Length: 128
Length: 370
Image: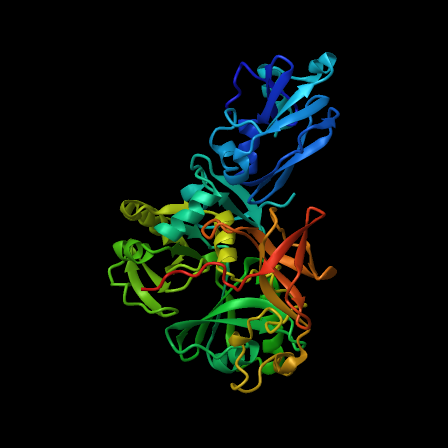
């Protein structure tokens, strides 16, 4: 399973790429593999304030629907509109395909995130 | 802890890279191979796909009285010898016990191919009905042959080429629903029918259990030059859904009769008495309160089995199967709605949000016939 070193992760299989106060968020290789062929993404609304753990989006595959949770508190500023027509890009290249971009509000919350080793361990421990 | 049954072909593909095995009706079967459901679906529509369908129940009914027995048990006209026909096993109230393919090998020799999930129920029904209809010393044999055999579906525009490449006889001349027995293939003898569940041209191959793996491997090897892809349950479901075909447990169940499921053309009211005839005739004569329709989503979303269907603002029905049609490119649903009332102003409650939908005639996909 591919888990790139330069990214940060959540236990719910999201990856994060920080660019100052903005953060790009997508789902991991592990998540897209479990889901199977993605056919639809219910994107979050922009300019909306969210709290860490809020359910803000849904990814639907042929067989299942999985929620996406806000990895940090803040504001959703952008969504990846490519996913309206070609949601399968997430399967093809999960780490190059962000789902949304947010500005986070609380530096301290970063402590809840995992590095690539922590995420690898979390998958292993959960037998996911 | 319950352990899944394995088909005779399981070892042929269980260690394939990226295969995902699931339990389906008590059998360990591939949901998908490494390419994924959509790629497999597209392979069947464009070239050819290979399916292990050995989990289907194969029940022989043979000997004196078989014809009378099968004719009474099923709703459709019996097939002629060396033909198969789609039919239903219904109860007296017209409710569907199973949808089946009736194969006829001889004057008094039949095989019912039934859904895996209903195999036990169908066997019980056959044995019980036989007890009522026949004396013990003069009755047809009813034998569950499922675990003695394998069944492989080869489906797609290039299916004829692939199947011919492993058979010693020319199968391209086999007509739709025709059955060839005692065909020599990959060092064994098999039965072939021109049947399938995908909406494409195709064949189903029946072999004794021991020669199944050699047949499967032969199809994979010979089929490579035609682009054959092994396919799993996920693609099997998305293909049949796009082709508007019913799946027992969704469009059909014990409380649904074939007339309501918009499948009355597989009920032969001219053939004399059969189980459920009276109830089905009443349904067909204007008594059916529900009907099955196709819907296309206008708003974006993925309809799923169980979603409520609204017509002009009032909840009136339910989605039986839903999802993306990977060839046609729409999000669609099959649903039950009342027969009375106008078919307009449809909405489907998708993940608790109402999404507009419009009537779309079934099937969603129809293959081009040359």
